[in-house]
Image (cartoon, rainbow, N blue to C red):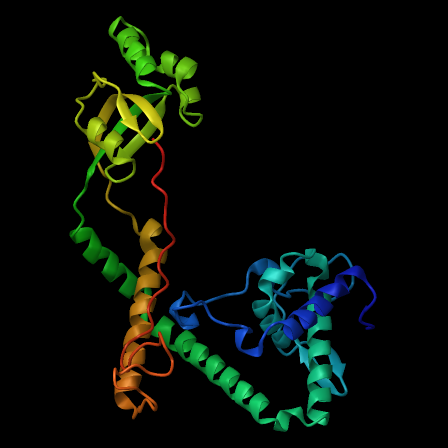
Amino acid sequence: MTVPTGNRLHRFVLALAFAALAAPAAAQEAPVAGEPEAAQATPAAPESAAPETAAPGAGAEAEPAEVPDDTVYATVNGEPITHADLRIAAEDYASQLNQIPEDMRVSQLLNLVIDMQLVAAAAETAGLDENEAVQRRMAFDRARVLRNEYFRDKAPRVITDEKVQEQFDKELAEFEPGDEVHLRHILLENEDDAKAVIAELDGGGDFAEIAKEQSKDPGSGANGGDLGFIMKGQTVPEFETAAFALEVGEVTKEPVQSQFGWHVIKLEEKRKEAPPELANEEIRIRNELTREFVTNELEALREAATIEIVGADEAGETPAEGAPAEGEAPSEVPPAEEEAPAP
């Protein structure tokens, strides 16, 4: 098969090459700051990125099928490029692959691996593999791959379905349901308008109809001011305090001011929070168990090793400022901040 090199999508391969030239070596393939790659859930290439076809570069492709890893797609100077090689490339470049049509992904991966092997061979011919800095980089990359494979191999045997179920059962036993309130509200721009709405409600006005006509909240206004069920901590404090003080069927007697404006709130019903279900908690539990496993594993390996930090100053700081101290696991990635939803 002749691999196309002049088509539009071949620029995908060239773009990756230029990106490699532009990026500092130390920044390439850097893990998420503050967390080892293996501390995250075991990565897997998206199905859409996996090269699961039998005829790369042949235009429209057949239904995806399982392909043996030793399937050969091409040879470069006698060296085979197999399905396993393309699968590894697909994992590393999944985000770029998602930007090109599915029926062209295998051919582009093949172009990428061919070019990579050709340039690597040229680098060896030029003696670059003997360069001290290059050898150091290759040693680092080798250690990183082995580290990830170590965790990838061991984690599934430690973090089993039974372990996840055990953790879930423990959390369920400690679960204390909170209060949930079903609310409606009408958002007004000023206090006088809010007082006028309260007076209209006192005179027998229909809350839902008034909300549809007058509420400035684009999210709930069209639905009669319905906010659904809300727990404590999900709205701004002023709104929450007034809402949870109401009795079922009651409307706030005075307008409630918040950063969003002036609210008239009605409590429709109260209930207790439903207990969690494993299906909704499993991913979170697996991620937490994975982080715990990685931390414990690193601590055990450090305790069994002889580690001497060279160059520590009198204050005890090491040359690698911000690096974890001996015996301390790298810090976790902080969760993304969530804005308090507007009522």
